Amino acid sequence: MKRHFIRRWFLLVLVLVIAGGFLAPRQLAPLVDHLWREAIVFGVLFLMAFSLDSRAMWQAMRRPGAAALATAINFGLLPLVAWGFSLAMFKAGLLGRDLAIGLLIVGATPSTLASGAVWTRRAGGNDAVALLVTMITNLACFVVTPLWLLWSTGQHASLDLPEMIGHLAVLVVLPMALAQLLRAVRPLGRWATAQRTPLGVVAQCGVLTMILIGAVNCGNKLSSGGGSAIGAGQWLAMLVAVASIHLLMLYCGHLLGRAASLPREDRIAVGFSGSQKTLMIGLQVAITYFAHLPLAMLPMVAYHVTQLILDTAVADRLRRSGPQEASPRQAGKSA
Image (cartoon, rainbow, N blue to C red):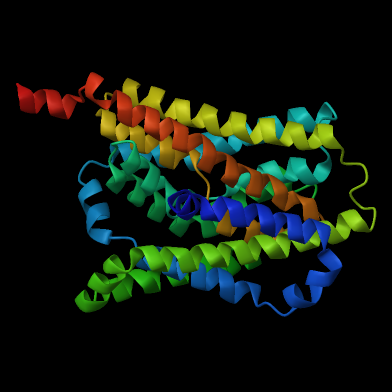
């Protein structure tokens, strides 16, 4: 029981945080109002980047094909697919404007900062590729994310492109760059590696705090009657949409990796890092730039929870089937 809780504590606390934000928004609002959101985001991204080993990423750059493919899926194909789902489901009346815009935010968000490498490693893949994709997409998101959102949501939101680029550069690029510079100091780098688990726990607590802020905002809107038009059908449609987008991109990563003759371990990395999205940046974008649509943060939360659940099953299946399929690299060694 204790071991199960340790492995699933984030999901369990996540449920409690969301429930608390929705059920008691007025009681929690005074607490949330005193939280410095930007400082939380800065600190979480710093801690996550501080625990990333840059040496593994440099090794992956020797064969950049897999990382380039995963980046193209995450920042190219996935946003287009999310846009298609959002437009089709909005026109069909399956999603309201908040949730439809939320899907667009999901698409524009960079790859996950931690779980991509973790699930890649769990499945027997090349986690160095996943780490490299993490750094590329997150360091580029201060330009790519605003451009995608300006194109896809321009008619629904007034976005100041230069302001958004500058804001994300300071909030995302600066902490990650600073963390990697500090890792270059060997004692600090060794300490960060040794303390990866506790640093990750602190970072996840920061993520939960951001989710609480968003949940309280959503709860206030629902309690005031602003979300009365959102029924069970729309919530179900949102869950189907995020699960479908994620699984489709996960499959495309493996399929395109096979077409590119990538080794099995690289295909696994492409699948996970190309299809996963980071909750931290997505929440910050939703709360900061779409405050008039409080429920727009829900697809980002749903996508994150969905990828954790689905990818656990996918990773375990890939790990079990690993010996049955030798990669080209392994075949060359055996020959």
